Length: 373
Image 1 (spheres, rainbow, N blue to C red):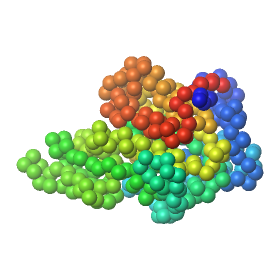
Image 2: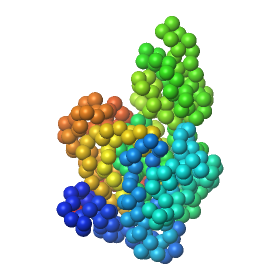
Image 3: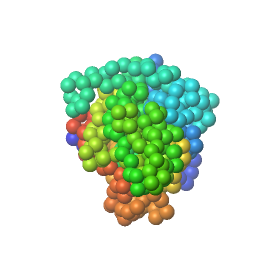
Image 4: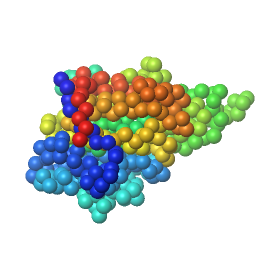
């Protein structure tokens, strides 16, 4: 079955064509008003960005969606869950501070911010996968995501150090899971390449469970990962200046991505016809917005896409990024030419496993029609 994905390019020559207007037009063209009923508590799921980063979705664009939901009689709130790793969003208080710092305040976005898994990440509901899961019988989902009547999922489509890329599926999977659910998905463990390790200690500083220590070697101190303690969050991989930390992706990569897909499916379970999606193909950086910086983009800005189908939406975004010519002065090591996979050009896992498994679960179809508005 073919799904419809609506696409708005970024060309503007008048106020009627500016980006905010295009967000509203995508909402209308896709018929998203049908997802929201009067007095619905509507979870607007997005990523507020880690302090130090600046390529998260603009609050100005979020405001357009909030206003459209209000027109339906819905009662929207912006939401995300606390991080597994230590950082500026590790608990509900710091998370709110970061959201406010980045402009996600009622005066700007027109809605309150509620951290869906609570102060310390223990507000959760166990959702059954009805025997469809390859890895899970149930998933731990943030309580306020489950209790919301409907959901609008806003995703910044970009690269990701562990998932290859992150879009709507990853936003649902990791973004709707409390700490226990994130641990379920991050089942892999870290290995250290001693030849590359310079013993700088940055990895140990960010590890949320103190799984990394250092041993004296002839060539200097080297990091050691305690596999019994490691929760596989991958934060150490992101910050290592020498790429000395990695996971065995040949064995673990596909399973990690499929586990994410099962969590994404659980996050929307019980809301048929009540969840819709917009992906922003702007500032397509190598890393997730979870890192406290924003690297140079790997391809030009492309546009904004909307669909009722997260599988088709992420597939369309991946295809559009692949079709671009990559930037030379970026993290891309290869695959600069049009038609070459840009995310694998940074030495990443093939993130399309998350899309294919989501399709197998019945979340949507990889077959799509791209309709430009």
